[in-house]
Image 1 (cartoon, rainbow, N blue to C red):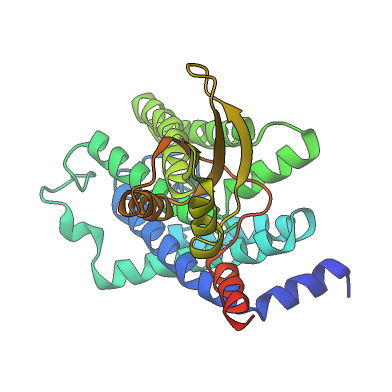
Image 2: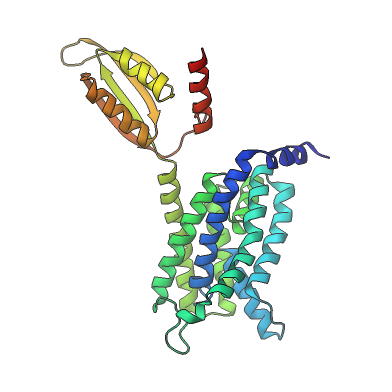
Length: 318
């Protein structure tokens, strides 16, 4: 048994994995809704394995071999997951395995509960919203929200995310470029079943998908970088360290106007923690000059909620 396999099996036993499984299930259910109700009826081929599954299903059907889209999707994702198991890290692989394998069954469940055909008003209509552009927008926003949820917990919806990871790892290509190339290739396969107009719409959808994912991902990861200049830093430092359980950096600075010495405190906080800090400063009438800006990515030591609770518990028992 390899070290990577041992680590993967150990991760499966943690409460963190099972808690995040609920988020993965939610994210994949949103994905299933997006694909089944907005992608399948219109046959829009966006740069995803869902789009590729539609192409394969149509081609097999034309050849006299009817295969459901959900089955094609499961087969494609299974093949990619075999590659991911050997070529990508364990945690990402395990989460992607789960996410990819539940998408097909979830689409079958939606078909059983409420088929999309019930939403098509006119005979021959292929758009749930009545306009293919509205279908595209609905699909992109739902899928991007689901992908952002999964990326947040080091997972993915599978499919082309795996391809992009592998390409990026072995060619040192930027992940964004790898995703764009993979998506464009899949979108172009639609030329075999769709008119050129729909192919162009699919490529536009692939581009929009990347933009909206970046927006949702940045929103979920957003932090506040706070800079506080004051003559009374100790109450603020104590509140950040002991109440918010966050770190901070302290600098001696000098005002450029009066050349008076001050203290500058810098810290990274969540939005709610920043609100609590501002309320504390206001309630205690602390004179301070405060500048706050948004930060979308944080690397290194960042306390999770469970870690913060543990630190507070240790402080209380001392």
